[in-house]
Each structure stands twice: as C-alpha cells, then as structure tokens.
Image 1 (cartoon, rainbow, N blue to C red):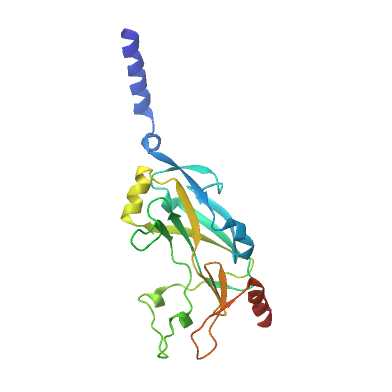
Image 2: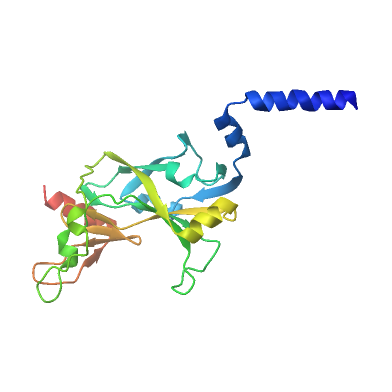
Length: 222
C-alpha cells in the first residue's frame, strides 16, 4: 500500500511539472480520417495538380488513414500548381465529408470552405437584360493571378456548426477533396470535369469543349 501511494505521488509530481500545452495536447481527442482526391483516375484532365496537403504543418498521404486532432481544419493547407496553359484568376477546393447525407438538397453533405481565392470574372454575372447582376461583396473579392506553372496555397476558413460538432466528436472518417470552378483570365472555365469557353459577345451560352480544344484556344490567343 505504501509503494502504491509512493507511485501516485511520483506521477502527480511529474504531471505537475509538465508544460500546460503539452498536457493539453495529450488530452486532445483524436480521430482517423482518410483523405481522397477528386476523381484521381481523371487527374490528367485537371487544370491543376495537387502538390501537397498539410495538416498542422505536416504533410499527409492522400488515400491513407491520417490521425487528426480536434480543431484540425484551420490548420489544413493544400498547395495546387497550375498545369494549364492559361492564367487562373479564381478557384478553390472544398473538403466534403460524405458519410452523413446523400448530397441532395434535403440531406446535403457536410463540408468546409476555403478562403476565397480570386475574383469570378464579371462576365459570369451578365444577365439576358444586358446588365451585370453582381453578387453582394463581389467588388471586395481580391483578384489574383496564378500563371502557368505557378503554385497557390489554399487554407480553410469555416465549416457549418453541425460539421464542426461532428468533427470534434470524431464521427467523420472520410474526407473528399472537391474542386470548385476554376476560371481563367480569358473568361474560360473548368467545372465538374468539363472545360468551357466563354460565351461569344452578345450571347449567354458557354461552349463546352474537350481539353484538346481548350488547349488549342490558349495557343490561338498567343
């Protein structure tokens, strides 16, 4: 009994001397999540390449289980490289958690959103009345230009309250990286696996094209 009491005294003394951050970190709940890239089998058709994904300053391996701590989302960064022949002016990546919900409007999937990168071209908001119907805050979107071959790092800004709660409780085990629409300096775009050229002047119909046609359109503007 005396030996047991002595052991507890030693342990209590050790914990008392541990730095508070280290002690708090050891008590932070963790969970395991597998991060999957979007349509990896079609990566040759992407306008960007995923260079690195980091959480808490450490690179992670896509497609394999990763142990994360509560509150990891704001520490996640994704570095993309522009592998298209055009300057990217807007784009991003979502973190989508597919386990709850089926993606319908009634049961949407949980997601986290990145900090807004770039400004969606004004022509996107041109109405059939000939007027631009810009969304609130459009003018505050900070333009950026990612030249061919250059890289951009995206960080995540927010999740819904329900998503935050589920992440903190460790209920999510899968995360999909989902590309948002990428817009290019000439007004063309890539969205949902499809390239499109901007509507001709005076029209509103985007022209869906193959990657080869998209590449040819870049050569024609040089």
